[in-house]
Amino acid sequence: MDFSKLNELEVEELIVEANFDNNITLLKVIFLEKKIADINKITDFDKWNYLHRVLCYFTPSLDLIKFYIDNGVNINAQDVYGMTPLHYALRSKNVEAAIALLEAGADPNLPNRDGLIPLSMIGYIPDRLDVLELMLQKGANVHYLVNDDETILESYKPTDREPELKPIYDLMKKYS
Image (cartoon, rainbow, N blue to C red; front, side):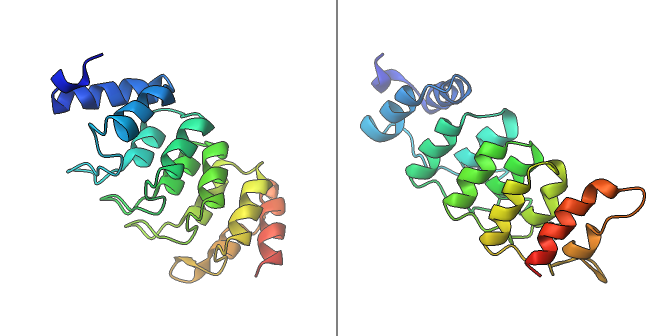
């Protein structure tokens, strides 16, 4: 393929296809060898980097997530909504991506514009206590206020109607 004849839109379409197809070889050519696109590009409107983009639109492979992490894409970048790649990984229930981001240093305490931190989103994957424990080990704040007078820890206190919250609450309690 003659990359020199591609315009910016065509390069962007190629990146989207490579992301969707998990074609890391092509991404390496585009970003690292030919350098026809900036791996740290931020979109104008949403302020998304490539981690935001792949986590918003589909369930990317762990290899794809690691490719972007290993090549310096900002794991704590906040978009126009204040959302980080970790917020999007949790929202989309992409456990592998969440773990990779946390292991790379993603901050579980960065609030979005609504004040929601990634730790608050553990309810999307309540059966994955390993992700919760990793967030807690990485300094997730169980005392962060989610409402005027309620912490994340208190918000996960089990009730008779929500007994499934008990394991989450018990683990958070250990870090309180």
